Amino acid sequence: MLDVCLLGTAGMMPLPYRWLTACMTRYNGSHLLIDCGEGTQIAIKEKGWSFHPIDVICFTHYHADHISGLPGLLLTMGNAERTEPVLLIGPPGLKKVVESLRIIAPDLPFEIEYKELKEKEETITVKGYQIHAFKVNHNISCYGYTVEILRGGKFDVERAKGQNIPIKCWNRLQKGETVTEDGITYTPDMVLGTARKGLKVTYCTDTRPTKTIVEAAKGSDLAILEGMYAEPEKIAKAKQYKHMTFYEAAKIAKEAEVSKLWLTHFSPSLVGAESYMEKVREIFAQTSLGKDGMSVDLQFEE
Image (cartoon, rainbow, N blue to C red; front, side, top):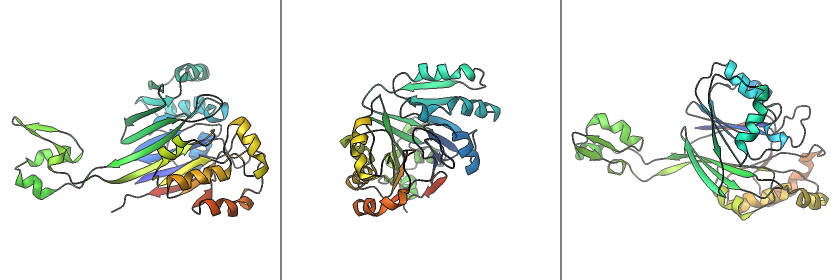
């Protein structure tokens, strides 16, 4: 099971009942955060989720509405008695930006590890998450992310018994490890069936539509994409500032054949967003307006 919560949905500036951009996932006791705008701590607290298990924080880019909540969050994590390292992932300049912000949060009881993205696409595996970062088209270096939980094949007890594989090796083999016991090496393919469908979430804001987004989001159980503008006449503004409209996000979701689309990162000037949704759902029916605190528990298919 993968829990996903859209903590903040505002773009540019926080509004009453709408915090700045942030999204959190929970899997197997480990929390992953994408972006950390102003109000992220309050949103986590309102949701009733914990600060201590946040192991990974990914940043799409370094505009203030996506990272301004970080110093306070780090301090709160320290006050929650976290001592394990925290991995930060983001575009080039990550360490410089974070260390600058840490002038107001200098003393932490845990180490910060940095993974600066240098390629157009990179994959990082950590804490059971497979994180695929892909470069998008904004006016500064910006990345989208897919977060996947891969699922191996089912363990075949009869095959394990038939090959006389010691029972004490079964658990490690089931986890995908290669095991050597009494001079004999056992590999996962000896006992596991065909890999089963896992879970996949794609998160992308602050960009014009690109083929890379479609390719990365392909088959996602949930896509969370920016819908900065809903008014059709604002397409020129979207192009100028390199953002997406509701309709462009819906087209990406349709092309990528995702199961559900949540729109996020709304312009502070947007009012009456629901009134535009009929036309959006004509493009992609399974589209929802993102709301702060909106969440879903994604389940593995049996």
